[in-house]
Length: 333
Image (cartoon, rainbow, N blue to C red; front, side):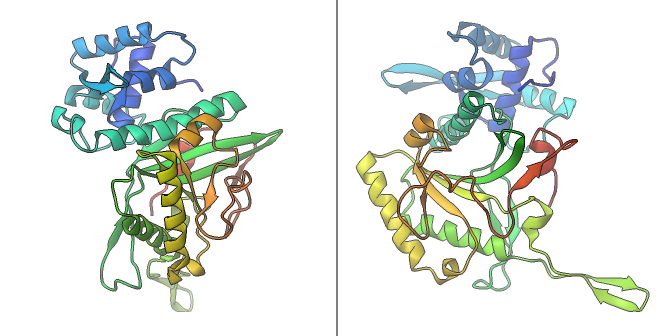
């Protein structure tokens, strides 16, 4: 997918593309940038030169990280670089700023795992002839809602990422939208199950309708779920597990399914949630039978990720519809 020309100005196209990715995803390794920005290059030397150009210009900074016996660099934009990207106005502005302390902090591995999850979709879309680029997922977008079990509280659901993907089958093109939650086994399984409850509550939440003036006096608008103002269809929830052995992750999936089955709020929900491992996602791709439904049958199925969705199917893309999923995401709840 071609990139628009973007800031920082005066630099090469690859450096500009890298700056966009760094702005969107906050902390990205050289290896990940190579997969996302210059996959057509066998080696990463050219990309490394572009990144060091960004660094010399004061737009980017990096810190070393030990990985598989070697040191790799993790990159982020400086305040100067972030302001340069924002000045062009092609990406949604983000208040978050990375720092050396945050880059070396406890959320480092989780941030990189989220990027790895999105990169798996990008790489398989490239191979399958679908559409999903490095800017087609956004980390930590707030979704406000209320839950009947917690009256009076305004709650906030923040997925690790919201990812859009255009699936192509012949002439049929369909926009798929996903909530992505990455679990590195750092939280308790009970807390992970509570996240499922939060997604189910957000699915059901409908703001109180307002009174409007009509020819026959005031009338109350129909209450629609908040998500309908933001998404063409309610996104599927993808839980991606990593950070432990295959056996431990398998036990974690079984435990999550057991807790979910005992939650009465999930018994009647239309929420579609599936769980897999990061290794499976990277190695086999999202359209293989790698996702185990959190509710129902325990066998992974390949149709789960693109099959019928409740309460309405995913959004079909027709003639004249913007091809970049981001164009459809610019709705606020």
